[in-house]
Image (cartoon, rainbow, N blue to C red; front, side, top):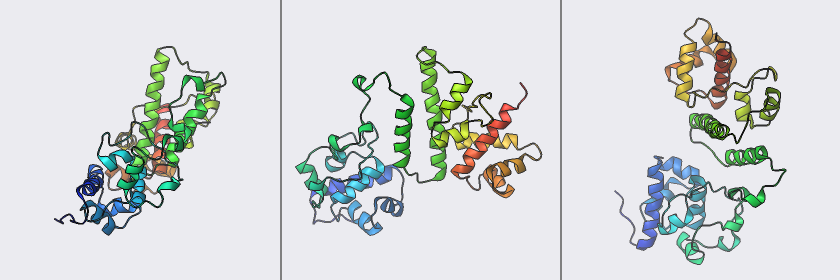
Length: 288
């Protein structure tokens, strides 16, 4: 095992060890982690083994990419991650651009950076004074989801598909709680159809039946992961001709469908949503 350098002090070595801790916790290889934060593998290895101190520019990339509290990375003071997503501004603080070490920046401005005044407005919790009679929860929710999606990249396309399915299920769960308490009511089908068409594409494309407002929106609440979806596809494709129909729906070859069902390959996010829509159609036409 490589030995830490004697050229940097104990404080810097502790910062370096926290970089390695972040990578090991998420089980990423050095090449993948280095690529994600914009560093070479050699530079990352030198930092992790305490041969080179962590510079501010790289620290900022680590915190942005893996949602780490800068204060924790610099000092070790818990918590490691913020209690809410930090959606970073692209703009950096000008007074810190020339500072070379994370610890020096931390000594100048202890705590987390960017400062609260530099954070986008949607990072704050909604306060009662912000809500007026014209408040539209749909615009707020869609805006927040859009910002999350635009600032997030998944390592694996399957994880991104599972995230979308789980997020939709979570929203439905919270909504059911509000309905049970009488705080939210379901609108009539025509109104629901029109409002739901304003939802983000990654939800509406899956959940909406485009046949018209006379049809209910089909929600497949029991399918919350790729494993659930594949289980359902295996059941439905036992009937002759269903694999070919599924392949046509997903715009892939029948061989690709067989590989999904055998789990020798994974469907793309687009194929996951197309397959889910196919399942919805089959369930809607099942005999009662």
